[in-house]
Length: 270
Image (cartoon, rainbow, N blue to C red; front, side, top):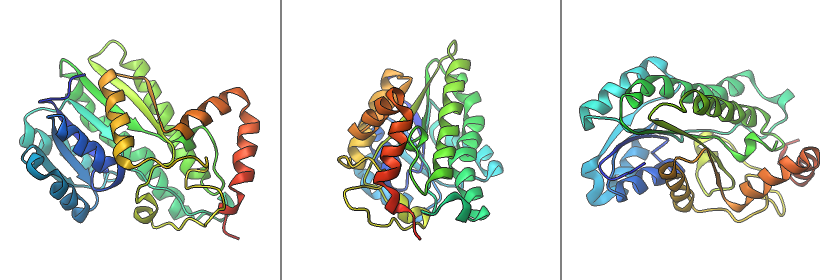
């Protein structure tokens, strides 16, 4: 779909990939409603937007709060007059511990943000998107949705749920104006660990996303996501690690799992 003059809602827009997606859309001439839990993060996005900030509105919101999310479309319409796209980028990871040691509160938090947050925003904005001549719905899953990482079992499950939710929506909305895209980032240099309140143990030869590949700058990841949205792509793989592991898990799924599990076993705190 075309970007100039269109209105896009971006969650997680206070930092990392979400911020860069918002800024990238603004640079292409779009109007953006930036949503995030962090007021200071949103202020940083406004500062980075510079002269484009006159086409940017900010909305401090917790995506796990269904009632608050239900009110968000009205606020965006008041600020911009229409809504042409929703990009769900907000997400967190879990503490790096085995499933048996993961607190129920941490399980609930990861599922609420990563899965239910996407459900809430999609339900809130989809009626408006369906009313447009052309619209986009983009949900960011993770490479962890198709390759398990030690100590991130619930995170991976939450992102796998986003994958299947998005693919189901793609199937249901094929004959509508809404193009649905699921995104699988690999290793991207963001502050997700800090935002999640999580420490990543050092692992020789590895990286945060367990693929031992080049870590993408968030600006580059955002550009790939925006390009995929503009093309109306079904799936978008972000980074060479995501592409390699997508192929590897299709070809020899158990071997792919054991390779990553062995390489990244040191992520688990003992």
